[in-house]
Image (cartoon, rainbow, N blue to C red):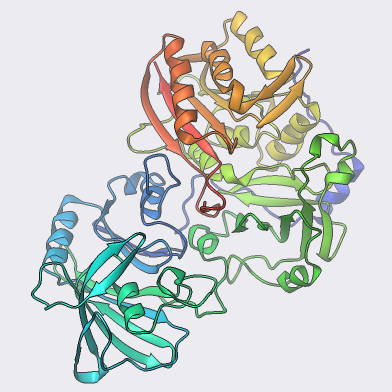
Length: 575
């Protein structure tokens, strides 16, 4: 059965919850506030403070985006971003990009001439002084306490080993070291070899704290930071010095979320993403998730902290959700819902801000709170109409009518809200009337959207796509973000097994030159398999892909060897 869910009065339970919400109003959805990681920007240069734990660039075509890839696809003015140097994934600090041909030519020449000066700070668990000699290194003491270190670096597996050489030798690596205080050193690379500072400091008997690859003591991160960089401005030759302060060991927390989040526009981020424990900030509430019952002491320690920095909302309460492997066997939502660990109770609902849009979350309506914030960047792309420079404008020029979007598996209509804020007319389709009502009566209403301009259909997605196709309905965009597994009256769905069939069912509803947004969090499905299956389904339908863009999960969901990237999204323009 099909029906539009008419706007209804807020029930008493929701009215009480609404009275406790923070007073928030939606803002312009196109992200406009400066990102905290940006140090400097003009017509020619973009300079950022790269946080530790984030690659400079994606290590493979279908891997999670590095800071370079993420920035380049984020803003149209950064589409020409060019990379001239790199920092290791675990190294933080100053990173410079070119934005114009003039800048790229100048930066390349300055790096080749070694006229760019860089200074790093590094912490070591060793309190010893700089040695007078070290195996494999050529050492030369200089004025002002500097020690000049040179060697050849030879790769052995994942690390590099040092061998003595003359500085005139081909491939010589040269670094200056000076001790600032016990355990803290300044390093200035004269050359720019891979792992140069890390290998040299280890060979000096002063391995970087947290650098287990080179024998460093265990720590929360590799404590190597690119503190400053000086160069000449490409356009006018001015001498510029860019600096980025670093945290100290023991005080390092949430650097990636803080770097990428303007908290006035987004207060919904992941603070920790590990197999053992995930920690999410949801407005002024923290949600921890693990297979155990949570840590009350750690939860109480979070109260009053400001994970997104000064000015952001302090944490008022901490919930914990026990991850279960038998979710399908649980019938009562209360058995699966998070429980309060610390802080004032009674806040069963909170309102959060994402890219300027508002969403209501619930801690009492089941296993999920109502919004999957690993899709934050994809919702931003819908709201701004910008996917990437190579993809082109998201919506076709249709001055007489708004673009149309069919959001399958809509859940609480997060994607629909983003698209509607971007000017689209949305149809949200989901098997749950409850969650569609949540999307309409709460999320759409919170953002001041006229619900009469949009449509809601509750029912099985496969069944309704067939019905809509028979009626000749077409949309400028069709969005597919199904659950990994689901069961309906028409059968069971598995993303790993049935995604190609889902694409085939959706294509008759996609207008010529329309956009297909296909996404899945099926962890066992590799990115290569996912992309191949989706594009094969498009080809089998006799249609042609004319533009594409692949995106993984956002930077605050960093993948690792123990926890590989699970989210895969493919944007396709289909003729």
